[in-house]
Image (cartoon, rainbow, N blue to C red; front, side, top):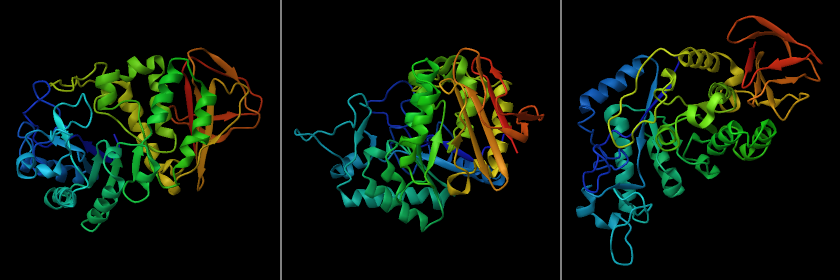
Length: 382
């Protein structure tokens, strides 16, 4: 399909004390250097990493630095590693997270042990980086310290579950585009429109520096389990937003099962296999990922192109933009509404460009009337 990085959710042994559900939450870590035996053996994981590398893919794993399970060995051996309330009791980081307790990053020995554990997976298994859970709940200066230590072992890729700009200053390569995800949902419900998307791209998104990667997504493990599948949340616009999220500036995320058109909410604390099946989304993702790799206009950071909105006669419903770099060009034209929309461009748009999905050359002249069906889109490339 063209996937470049595999993000594997936590593979550590899960705590048993105060466990949620049958399997528990994989974010309730009992051993930072262990492999959950329910998933396989350390040798199995090493083989997986080696196989991914042989296919040209990188592997990052989920890292839960903010809290541990109640039965992590540190609870008894180093209780000073944890925050406590006025009664001297361990505390969950969030009231609903009763299966975990929060770590205390004012303790320098804890920091050293956490960095040691992070380095362990690089040296022992050869992984390529981390997705760091609730990164904004851990002091940024710790992440800066950890990144410097990891880079001395090998170059790493770091994804923060967070959206604070200071995460990019030293520690992280990529952060979540949460505001954009929320905006997709509001547009799908008819509460916002294409002009709101343009305002977001010209405003909040501009606060990130040029080489800050932003993770663009229409689903993930949290969204699917707690808020619904992309089909529930985005309705008939699901495919439209899937394609759009692969063309905007940033790095797209494919959550396991999206390529199979998964239509169910996956259980968070129970075993819940995905029904793997042929689905049109697989071909769409494959085409888009190939374009992302081969068309420099879509490359990340300063290696890629800025996106420039193209004015239409119907900007409230139509979001059209161009990205051009080194002779490469991608033009996206999206009807962000549930109604058929007619519009035209003030300037010529496409000359010598071909439709990404049909391969046919298309020319769009100034003033030419264009009709797009509800949630229809065009992607033109050169």
